[in-house]
Length: 266
View (cartoon, one colour):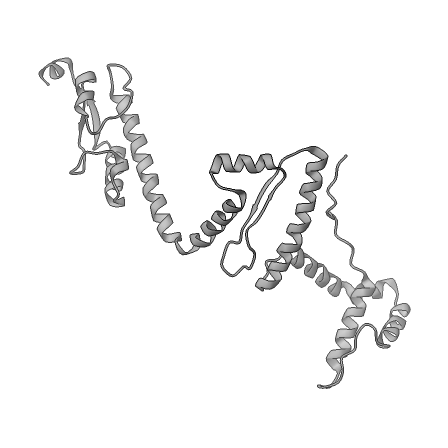
């Protein structure tokens, strides 16, 4: 069975190391200002070790409980916490991306699976340049064929999109809302058209030559709320689109199938 080499378990925190750390910290905090701080290599460790040997298991547990918890939290923060310092984040990213590259290469060699990896920074504070990885030239050919860009160019495009998105969030949000209104309104109008027809299914809605539908199917539109009769996709005003959608939802705007005598007169 194949396994990743990446460690999946957390190494247990040593109570002795926890005790040593907190005792050295306590000792240093008690020193007058300007005195040299003690380190692990100093003779102080022997005194701390002597104290440790005299303690019962219960005393050791009580003395180190909080420190052990603190050390576990520090490990978790290093593994999963978000970095506040860009240079620290950069180093973390470089080390782990190098490790993952090796993992992907090994997995590709074992299984012949193909990989495409794109990594880009999400803001300008990060130092990381776009990182790309492909497991073979076949994957790179696929990228060029489908996107008309190399993998490196795709990484740069991804970075530009992610960084630029932050400053254009409001504009992009408004644009997305207008696009949604256009789609929703057009879909509703097409649905109403099909439901109104009593002379067979209508292939598609016509706005420029709507009279063709009346001539072929006896369909007319009533209660159109706007001055211009055109496809929802040709409106750029959110207000106009909301008015149009509201009219079709409420039934103010509707299609009506003419009776035979009305159709003959038309």
